[in-house]
Image (cartoon, rainbow, N blue to C red):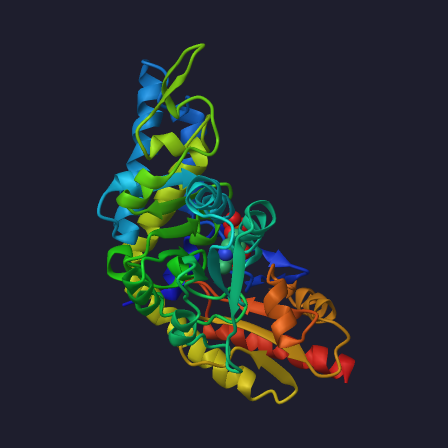
Length: 406
Ligand code: PLP
């Protein structure tokens, strides 16, 4: 039985007030709050267990290395990767996708080759591909979502041509909450020799993920949305694809030997992790993943599905709110605009006065905003500690904003 009251006690920040009101934190899509176990792990590491990793032969270096390296197995289990050697640590999804752009796509793709993106990608899964377009003459092809915000997998499959080398696609939209059938897309892509990169920044927070079942080549996650520290993250890279990659950032730790005449690289995944890594951040991410897995990803998903259904009903009752993304197959992420309100920022400022934290703006999704014909939206994004009562407070605060703007 998922006891959200007990879960909330694990997050100290949730008991604070903002603007003299209890905090209602609905900005999880941007970054999630941290449970006490993660905060304790960070404090313990810095106060008792800190040293650089992979380098020293002394006690603390070995301890820090063991703690850090144990996270690789945790991420592998979290994503159901076949081996922990398929996990590369990084600072988050942005770095993970850039790694694939520089290390895999740049050497593997040639001018005229095509990359397929959906129109709802985050800039982190757009800009690295624009680099390839600008520098190597790669062609980007866009697939639209329908009026409910759903992405038809067949539309993605139909966009594949003999020139297509990669499909880079989100598993869950950070704006609409739309889930994408990445398994069907991957199966069709692989039948045509096309690689698939999945941006799991949002999906991995809200539902169980099995990269072997999906079959994708690359799957990116970001620690700060997974209730872990900022500056942590990982990317799953299928073993065969790793063999095709060239190192991107050079420096210590990613080499076995360096002489005046040359370099012998370390074996993957270390080959793709140059320099002193985010030691404490990664250890914190491991604890956050343990925390989520202890709660159970299926339990978290069921709780958030209840929140989604409750929010759909409540927001649906406000006929002056336009919710973007009405497909039923979505996570508990709600982007909306309000009739008469000057700008999404105005709404969020009113909500903030009531202690309700939402995000307003473009959410790093310029092409999606253009597709929807909107300058910006307000976004309420829920997480494992949110409650129906908090959705009621959101609705009350929206009613106040509506009165002010009507
Ligand atoms: N992709 C999606 C879908 C996101 O929501 C985000 C963050 O908002 C990112 C990528 C980028 O993640 P990060 O900033 O942690 O690298």
